[in-house]
Image (cartoon, rainbow, N blue to C red; front, side, top):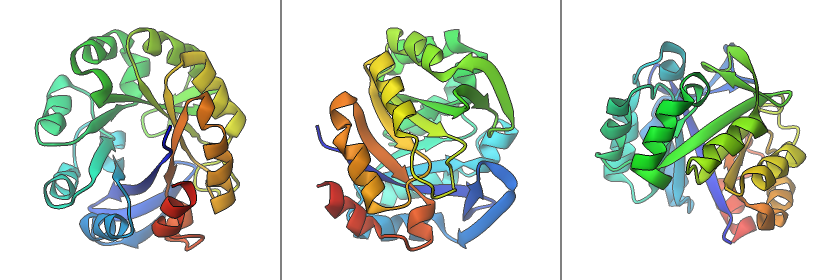
Amino acid sequence: MSFMIYPAIDMRDGKCVRLTQGDYNQETIYGDSPFDMAKQFVDEGAEWIHMVDLDGAKDGKRINDEYVLRVVNELPAKVQVGGGIRTEEDVVHYLNQGVDRVIIGSLAVTNPELVKEWLAKYGDRIAIGLDAKDGYVATHGWIETSTLRAVDLGKELADAGAKTFIFTDIATDGMLTGPNVDAVIELAEATGAEIIASGGVSSLEDLRILQAVSGSGVTGAIVGKAIYTNKFTVKEAVEEVS
């Protein structure tokens, strides 16, 4: 199974930013143009771009979608997008305009029955974003933590047809401390689905460790801060796992 690198572009006010552990008060701006950043990543060999509308995640509606669609229309990469997707209209808005995969996060917790309907309808073009704090799912831009275990929700949605999960351990996100490999494997084994690991990747060694457990169903890694702080390049990451 091939292991995919997903360089991340988190958007706020039309800029490329990174939050530390999802804290909107701990923001670093890394670029003024999501498109230019995506182009750089594609030029370095990225086959996928992972885009997050942080304003949308917080406000519950699409806000930075114009930047997503420009990448879709002008660059030869696949795009998955999350943040602010709350209605079927949002899902269709993206899928009909060429986005390859939409990521459903908070709604998977607050309205799992609706998400199950979408899974039945749109299949593997829906990915489930599970953001966990101490094993429990966090929602609404990580501002709230639920009483639901990520593994339990993962099993329920996998049974309903979810094929791809993006798992973020909030404790490691933006900290460059290494991914929570055990939690990623636990989710992969519990769901039988493909898991994309997110959060904590700080070195090419971290990518090697994740790729080494790809047999469990860990099929990729989202990389953000490590790229923006020059720990390694997208080119180096792609070469490492190819």
